[in-house]
Amino acid sequence: MSGGQDPRTSRRFLYHFTHIDNIAAIFDSGYLSCDAVSRQGLTRTEVGDPEIKDARRRRRIPGSAGGQVGDYVPFYFAPRSPMMYRIACDHRDAIVGRYAQGDRPLVYLLTTTHAVIEAGLAWTATDGNAANATTEFTSDPATLEAIVDWQLMKAERWSNNQDDPDRQRRRMAEFLVHDRLPTVLIQWLAVYDERHVSQLREQLDDQRLVDRIIVRPHWYYGYERR
Image (cartoon, rainbow, N blue to C red; front, side, top):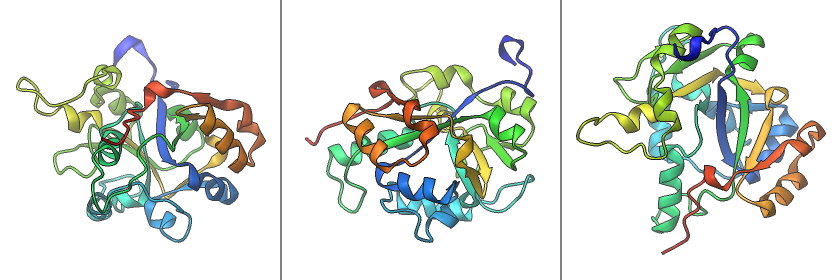
């Protein structure tokens, strides 16, 4: 475990993103909900790939609260995930049948591992893409610190290469919260630019977070249409 961190008190930031159109419903409900619940009318604009979501609904999770990956709220350990890259590229390349608006309208909702654990929520974490058959799961904080590739989380480039053909899977390591996460545990919101700050404030009724909206364009790919 790097830096001698105590896994019981470490505060690893967690990053979940959703379309800005979904923010009002999330905060009105008081929860950030898993895919199984969000499909019941809470998602106004879906950004995920239907095939990937279907695979996640079928992938069983060992231990913890059990169930499938789709029964959990997913968080990444870093921004600019491979999933966001795909969303940005689908927009750039005008891929038919995919979400078409790109990554700029997406909002990051941030919390920490410490906040989730202290709240007593059921969770599990992975060493890579949760839908991948080779991915390992854990619900132990010490094991989490050991299996996540923290250096890769900091890397600007995460593509597979000849020396390491598993980089992309590992870069998609996840922290999964069972069923739903109360919005009171959300500590920051991040957007692409100031225009999206204004749009977000119009939807946000949680005054606690109005002054905790940060602009982070380097957390996005931001590709324009070709």
